[in-house]
Length: 381
Image 1 (spheres, rainbow, N blue to C red):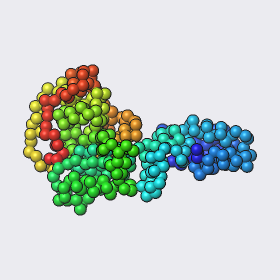
Image 2: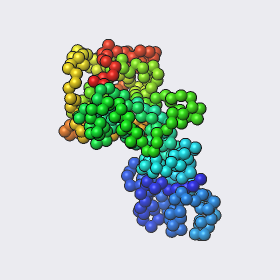
Image 3: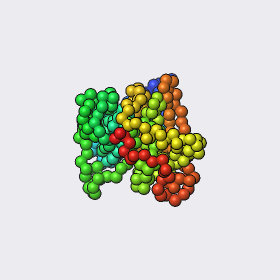
Image 4: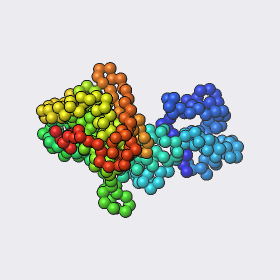
């Protein structure tokens, strides 16, 4: 073990014997009492020394026998110690790719704050490289999500969409002006390649040491160019993910409202069919209006404010990364909405519906309740 006080946490002395690690209330930890010798020793916990050398340095500085191990254990239990050499073989391989690792250092630092155990940050960051995420939509929201996930270390990011890139698809974090007129899927693939730190993993590497073909989907993100398909998702299009048990997250902008969520865990949280049934119960005219909206003239330029689209894409990508790292983010079974001009976020819980056959509401898992279907690849427009 090479102990290291997590460098992401800013350090300040509250008084002569009390040191605080971390600025924000969410992650700050106060340690005390700390004498002068121990305070000086803290500077040696930088990941460059193993415990035997640290014990020797401690003796030279006058620390009592056993104080070094006691201090490291105490700081570790407080979530303040990382291990510069931990994380397993995948983390070692990531550290060996200097260019990629340097680009991911800010992400590693952030993960070290969130995950307390030594080596937990490196382990999770390295695990992202073996994951496969599919983003359905290459508009202002979808393309930006894809580039953020690739830049965050996700090994395989696929973007599905049809048609050619239009001038209004261009965003600072997504498709660039050079993509106008090119096929959306090709332009998105090039975007992901540019955003990926280092080279993308080979198929066998992403599939694991067994090399048993392409890895399964870790997550599908539905981010259609027409945000209405994220606000009122089609149960028919989601049936394949329910059957395969593939988690999926909805995100988009419709008119002047951005939506992120829900994250659907098949059989465990509300699906598109649950949402459709619940909305129809609350508003008897909903299905009639939805059919009219879906059968309207195609090809219109969607209302999608650039600031709002970027905000939605960033939040959706952050929730996706949290899920890939093993957490259940606040979008699980919940949709978050934000509207112009005041941009006040509000949440709408999406409970499973008792009459939906997805299984989340207690019924047997099967075909998701539909009756409000639309063409499957709505983002292809």
